[in-house]
Image (cartoon, protein in one colour):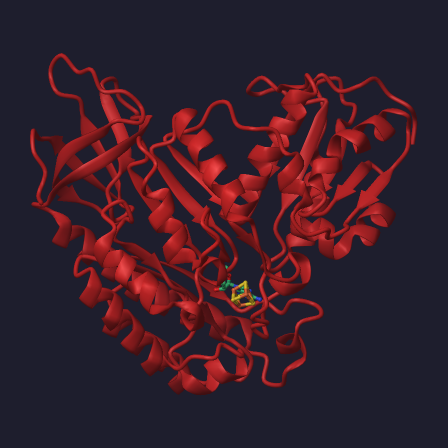
Length: 448
Ligand code: 5AD
Ligand code: SF4
C-alpha cells in the first residue's frame, strides 16, 4: 500500500444494531478530536469507516460490494477502515480479499483507530481485533453535544449462546461497564443536551455493578440511580433476555416514572421444541407469564419482540405456535427475520434447514400479523394525551417529530407563535393513527 496524505474528512457508515450506532458516534468523535472533519453531504470523505453488522446473511458480501463502490470525485479510493462485527469475525479474509482496505478494527479495539490511521498514512495496513475488556470506554473522548434521545452502552457481549447467534463470538463474553463511569457519562450526556437515554447492550438485563456506596446492584438499581439526574426525563433499555428479568426490574417499571412504559423482550419462537433447540432457556408459557408480571406492574406497557422464522427443523405447526404467541401478546412493535445460518454457530450445521420459499411465506404471514397488531396498538392510543420528546423538524414548515412514551413516532404542527425546540417535552393529544406513526395536536395538559 502506498503512503498517502493524512485524511482531512471522514464518514462513518454504521449498519445493524443500536450498539453499532453508539460505536459509530464514538468513532466519529475520536476522528473529530484528531482534527478530521465530517465530510460535507454528497461528497465522499478522505476516510470512510464501514461499521459493519454480522448478525444476518450476506453481511460480508455487502461489505465487499460497498468497498467496491466507494470512490471520491476524482475517481480515487478513500482510505477505508472496516469496523464492527464483520471485521471481528472475518478480519483476516477482508485483508486478503480487499486490497483497498487499510484498516480492520474490531468492536473492542476501535479506540486504537487514530494510531492505525497514522500507520495507514505511512502505507501500512493494520488489523486489530483484540478484545481487551473495557479499555475502549476509558479512552473515548467525552461527548460535547448530544441529540435529545441519546444512547449509552452499559454492557457488551453475551454469554447466552443461542444456537443461531454470532454475538457471543463477535462481541465476546458479557462485560458490564462500571457504575461510576455510567453515572458520569449519563450526567455529561444530559449536560450536552440529552433528555432521554437508552441503555444499550446485547443483554442489558445481565448488567451488574456496585453503586457509589458499594452495594451490589443490577439493571433496576442502575435505572433508579440514573433517574435521579436532574434534566434527564426518560430512560429506556434494550435488549434483554427473558431469563435475566428479575423482580427488581419488574417493580422498577411500576415505580420509576422516568422509566418509559416500553419493553423490548425477544421471544424468537412460540414453539417450545424450537426454543429448546435455540438454547433459549425459556418456554412460550414462561415468557407469557413473565409479561403478565410486567403488565401487572405497568398496565400501559407497550411490548416489542424479535422473531426468527425457519429455524432448522421448524415445522408448519411449530410456526403456527409463533403466530399464536403473537396473538396472545399483541405487540406494539416487533422485528422479524428469516433464519440465517451463521458460520461457526451450532444451528448452522443442524439438520432440517428450511427451504427459502417456506421461510419467505412464513415471514410474510408473521409480518402481516405483527403489522396488524402495531396498527391496532396505534389506533388504541388515539385519544391519549401524552408527552412527546421533540427530536427533529418535520417535513413541512412548523412541523415537529418526536416520540411518545411508548416509542411511537408522533408528528404535530406547532401551535401559533410556536416556540418549540428540539429536546422539548410537548403535551400532545394523539388524534390519528397510521401503521408507523401518529398525528398529534398540542395540548396544555397531559393524562396522568
Ligand atoms: N438469523 C436470523 N435472525 C437472527 N437474529 C440473531 N441471529 C440471527 C440469525 N442467525 C435476530 C434475533 C435477535 C436479533 C437481534 O436478530 O431475533 O434477537
Ligand atoms: Fe444472541 Fe441469544 Fe445473546 Fe441475544 S441472547 S445476543 S440472540 S446469543
